Length: 374
Image (cartoon, rainbow, N blue to C red; front, side, top):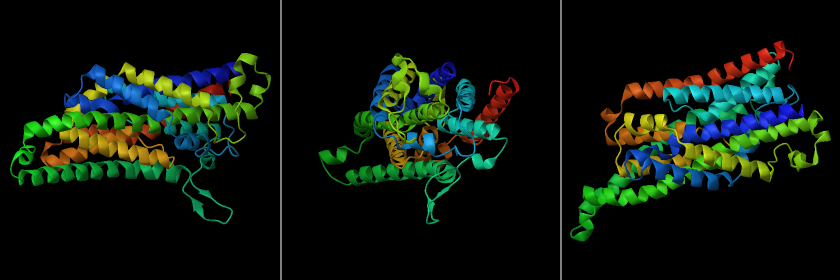
């Protein structure tokens, strides 16, 4: 069983690495498309800021480790988690190969839900939909509040915030045009592009930080969930001394140990450094032609959504927020500039992600059961 636990941790880190290169495009597509940074420099900026962001907060990790699956209904074994991870990894690789910016977050959540439902023989109470207090009022926890609501609201918020930020910037430029002298000349396209070319370095760093603060935490929660499950099953009772760090340092299943945070942060940064150029092409070039001011608006909008969601423990999709922010910026410039066929492909990838990853995880667990490994 210890070998299986180590395999789960390894698979979780593989998922984190894939998440890094799969979602690299989300962090840097706009800054590459506007030619503010070369792809190599943009990747290194994203990787370093991913690393920094991963150390800020664990609210999302706690949601994954204790807020989605009801351990009183289904035993969260290493087999369940491994199948969940494989469901997420499989869908991530498929969409990466096709160049579709799908959500790693929703792939992982779908995998968890599919594996838990399979292990419980389709007992839907195995999933925590909402949580109520002893007094009977509903907490903002569970799949409904932490997954379903953000899944709908974050793309809308990304779109609207992208439109609003771009409109605000255009209003400032329009105001500068009315000012005579040197200040008025700052509204000329050459000066606007030069200024936002520099400003986009800050917005790209902000985006990388936000990506790390939200996405890196999801795998932290998976590893913590695996360790608490192993502890409950007695797998950690006879650990060799060199693996003593695997013992959770707290009995609280929402606690995330420091070594988990550091490991996931480093692995995601390494994955980000590996890059994901197929998706960069879709986000940065195919949806709408971007200028530095557009990239600044899209990155600022998306990063703000991610940081806010991370604060409230919502595992929001980086892909959804940046994609819709770019759509919002494109709409703000010229609604006709958006390439609807590309957007339709992206939306279909969003719709299919959770059920596709859940289906893979569900079938994998049934196979594990049939082989007698569960």
